[in-house]
Image 1 (cartoon, chains in turn red, green):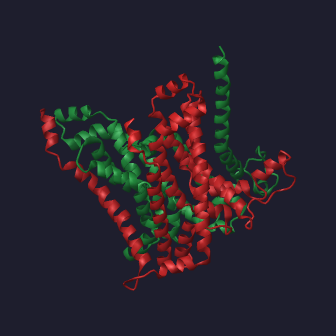
Image 2 (tube, chains in turn blue, orange):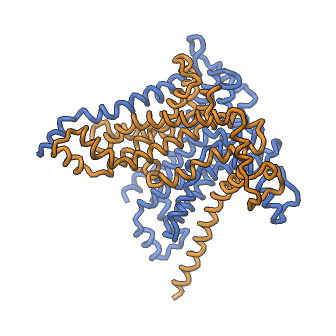
Image 3 (tube, one colour):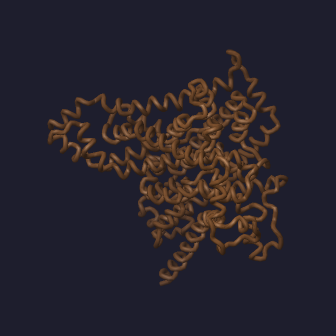
Length: 290
Length: 273
């Protein structure tokens, strides 16, 4: 054993001292507030209560917020996985200028939900860019009202467009990293045996990408339950989501407990869906052995 | 053989698909940019100019002169600055520990850090807003920075850990053989080599803080950050305010991704921990 190695040995406690600040910070500003959120949501005058949840559920906006949030998750996540898989396969296809394509595809990763919402409201607004283009192409002859507060289907579509634009980069980067870990031989072997492009994607690439798909799905579904500023910026008062209601109860109605009840609901929905995804995408043992 | 022709055609299709996807990402950024750099007449006009004819800073300067915008811009920069100092100061040692030591709690710690990346900000901000009132931190720059640090910390730990892992241990050991103690070896050898990576972590932390709107608008009233200010003004805002505001909020991201794209895979890509 060299002198250095011996000296390193003596420092066995060092890594624990090095992670201590992070652990302490996460305990104080992650774990503790979470406990406090449950306290706020479930307690009133030093007794346990469901009163805040009753207030939440009986509020007129609750049903709309829950419905619209779930709709967004169910529509956005599958669509953006198709787009992200396309981006990942294209980056992996060794095209000329792939560095530039990668940069462009990942650009939205640093764009906030509020900025994305404002950008897309400029596109969808009555005298905005989409109507300009459609009229220029002769598809419509006068500005179409995309952001009609009465038309919930259209409002859903506009938020879906903005969220897919903004948040697909996150899925793409996880899938790209996953693809880089798959040896090319597998796909090439399948090609030699006559598998077409879509067959290779379905039977070789997607199964091997499963761990990455799992991670990306969990992250995106959890983030989709938190969708907030995009919805406010695009739909105004037309639609609402769970995070928006939490924000409204905190900042407009000054009721911390009902706001916390919304936060707890968002957390529970996130955990339940993360658990479901991990269970449904579980790799069966017999498949792993092969 | 038909193989050559068979492969050329799909190749061309791949380029078409890549260009279309790139346009899908770039077009909205282009629209908000030309909108922000035009006269207010053009912003209200219809049909919109798809190729800008009268480039002007009128819309941007209208936004910057709107009530509260310059102050909130300053607040945003202060909050981001404090967040960078806190997140790097706290997270960098942990990143170093993960990169250099195989210790018993290491895997559990890494897993915790990975999991906290996906924690809903909503559940943190509401109780913290209540706690901050008790601690006298409500409506302060520091209060917002504390929440943003909690968001950025997991990423800082993951990025710095990959940065340190990329610096050869032999260099550090050589310095120690030549008489440095561990702290000196880290300060004189490892930190200078890690600087670009640490800068990337700082830039990413800046973006996390710059972009965050939910916690910021719950924790502040007078000392709003820029996103909180824009969100609060949104429902009475004019089109020029929106176009310029959207552009100012979005602008840093274009540069940031360019600078840190090398490290993005360490933040999100590492699947097997």
